Image 1 (cartoon, helix red, strand yellow):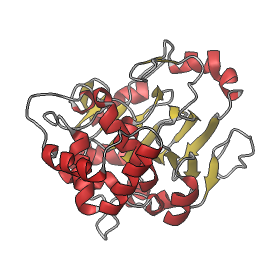
Image 2 (cartoon, helix red, strand yellow):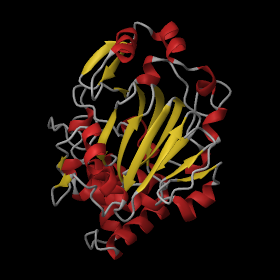
Image 3 (cartoon, rainbow, N blue to C red):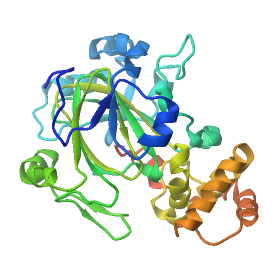
Image 4 (spheres, rainbow, N blue to C red):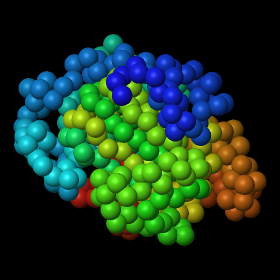
Length: 338
C-alpha cells in the first residue's frame, strides 16, 4: 500500500489529517490512530535522511540495543546486514547529542503534535522519567509486543520510511504472547518474523485487533496500556515520545503507586516516584490531581485515603531517598523499545 492509498480494511487504524486538543481529550485518548498532517510541519521532516544525518553526526555514538556505535558504524550495518531481526538504533539522549531544540519556536527542530495537549509528566522537569527516543532501523527491524512504560501513552512520528503496527486493547493479550498475572513478565518465544508467520492470521481474528501502516510524515498514537508490535517495512527514521494526558492521569498515578517494581525511567535514587509526581501535581494542578485520585478510588484502583493525606504523604516523600535503588529502564545498559 502506498501513502495516500485507501485504508478500507476493518482492521486498519483510523487515519485522520489532524485533531484538536478538545477532540483528542473527549473522543480519542483511548484509541490508536494515525495523523497525516502535523509531522510535515517539522524542520526535521524536511531535512533528515540517513545521508544528511551522517554528514553531521557520523562520529556521534548512539545506542543500538545493547551497544553504543558511531552513527557511521550503525548505518553501515543497517545497509549490509542479513539478520532476521536486525539491531535497532534506539537512543534516549539524541536531542542532547544532536543539539536539537524541541518545541514550536522559531529555532525548534520538532515539537509534539499540539492535539495531544499538555504532558503532565512535564511537572517533574529534569526529574521526569525517560520520555523521548530517536529510532533508526533497517527493513525487518522492530520491537516485539510490549506496553509503554509507566502506563504512559505515546506518539511515534515517521520521518523517513514506513512501519507496520499491530495493537491490542489492554485487556487482550496478543496471540503467542504469555503474560504473568501482574503483567510484570512478558514472554514471546518467537522473533517478529516467526510471530507474523505463526500468529498473524489468528491475531486478525482477535477482538479489538487494530493494524495499519504508518508512512513518512505521519504520526501514530498508542494509548496507555495497549499492546503493540512494530516492524520496519523499509529503512526508517522516527522520533517517539511518551506522555501523560489528563484523561489517563489516574492510570499513571495508580501504576506508579501500586506497581513500583515495574516503574522505569527514573534516575537511580528515587525510591518514591509516585510521591514525587503527586507532590508536583498538587503544586501545579491541584484540582486535576484531586479529580484523578477520586477516579482511582471510584475505580477500585486507589486505596481509600483522603486527599489531604495523599498530599501530605507526597510532600513528605517528594524527594525520595538516596538508598541506591535503581529502576531498570533508566540504565545505560538497559534501554528498551517503547
